[in-house]
Image (tube, rainbow, N blue to C red; front, side, top):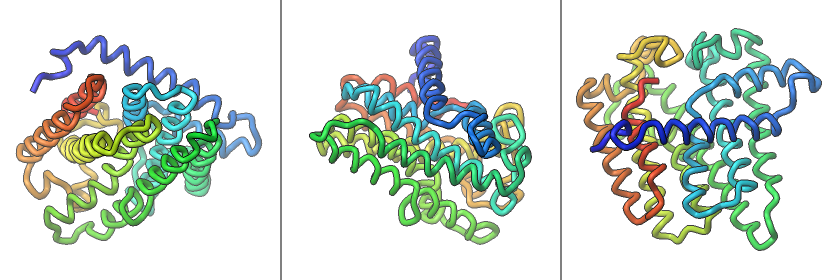
Amino acid sequence: MRSVSERGATDLAEYLSAQRERLHRWLDQLVPSETTPPEVIHRAMRYSLFAGGKRLRPILAIATGEMFDVPESWLLPTACALEMIHTYSLIHDDLPALDNDDWRRGRPTCHKVFGEAIALLAGDALLTLAFRTLAEIPIPNSHRDRQARVIAEIARAAGTVEGMIGGQVLDLLTEGEPFDEPTLTAIHRMKTGALITASVRVGGIWGGAEPEQMHALTRYGECLGLAFQIIDDVLDVTGTPEEIGKTPGKDAAARKATYPSLYGLEASRQKAQALIGEALEALRPFPRSERLADLARLVLERRA
């Protein structure tokens, strides 16, 4: 498998930088300013939202939408909503009641700066703003059905039955308990993979993708999402605080269900590589999928 470095790392870095800058501008417009009353909640929201990060989910939505020539006025608010939902989940995950982490993206977590109550409300506010943003995208009446499908897709991915919250619950319930591969895979696919898959699928929904195209995009997203979480598990064992921007070793300390704890580091890396291979194979029907392919390879190579 060719690495990103062998395929034009400079070009990819420029693309990622440009998309992050676009996202920053749109997010800055969508989120109330720090001087908007009540000021403290908006400071907390913006503190976490503009703390950096890979912006993988929104960039996946952008890259997919670009394959179908989706208008920016539809695509960028959707991408911003995905980042708001992801950030809300991180704020809540870091709270003492869940992962109890003091560091995120290389600086103190939201609750360490603003207190637990404001952090909880900041997460709630970002989730609420995300769905307001999706609902207010200016769509012609002829495409309102696509808007409804996008909203439902993201809500499902963030929810309890097959989405992020359900995966977080399973993660909590298995701490310190015996687990097998089906349980582990279910946790990872829901907690992390669901929103990553939705990020890809919404680009296809906005673009009017055919059913076979949606099937291929779904397969790509599912493989990518699971590989991303496996690499995240590996980095929790091998990474440094400077590299990963948070406290390493917390999964093992909490006796969480992870691939390294079940199979070891090398087998986990091999599983992630196989999944990225499947993700790349799923892109074969798309002639303009180079950005999605690069993003998949980047997930495998990441150190943060």
